[in-house]
Length: 397
Image (tube, rainbow, N blue to C red; front, top):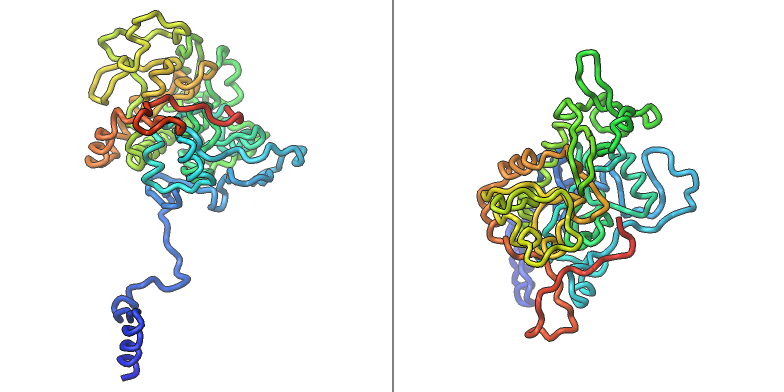
């Protein structure tokens, strides 16, 4: 009787009484929401990856938002020498109005999906992710993801925030630092980190000064997926490098599949020159000959089904402007060689594509030829034309 009277009173003033079943279905205040441990965060939302992920908010995570040198290991000798935050707003490829609206990370997911179209692969030359984070912090730099030797993925920032990892690509990209000591002209420099046992198997050997290196898997011993030293040419220079671990390739494939699904403009492919144009040159032309078809955006394959060869150097400016997909740090900058000659692009990309759903692959294909571009806000909308992404912040890597 009293409930009916209360309901009538609330109805008269424009409110309603929820049904008993609706009240029962509502979450109980204070009930924890379970997580699977494979989630990444984009615009405050959780997305599954199918591989182990440690977030910056998790115990043992690496937090790029912190201004103070707080680590799960001894801090630098002089904690007063701080570089300030190593991340910032995504400012390119945005108009002035868009940059103002998204200032402070005020992104909605659909808006961010229109502006992120590249996934940059680095090697960290630090050996393990804990050391990588320490070095990045000390240099005032950042990256959204790190992949340790055991395949653990660490996310340090929400992807709505720009990390300072790849100069002009920072605004339109997501980056990952993969634990690996990198490529060298002299393989002698790799002997501290890689040892061959009496049976001939090569293992990743963390130096004693780093303890267990912070590797999450207890007593983990990593092995390059190929047992021999790999030799190759990047940017016209020769390097020797040990390959990444099987666990890293599997984790990176899951992360790549996830990013290409969440951000359909990131094509699940890597920079390849069309086979009809012959093999790519070993070094990018600084002054391309007029009419050289290999320097045009049309020189790159446009679908995973098209035959092509990995481009082992920086993309030409027009090619980079138009490029959507996974790429190496050396495709962005002349002075970089990561992820090096040992990185197996086909192994990772083919595995990533196999992990994507048919609908995600179709959505990926629908977003081809739609690169993130900047239209200067000073131009009238009717006269505006697409322009290359502008340079970002002076804090560049």
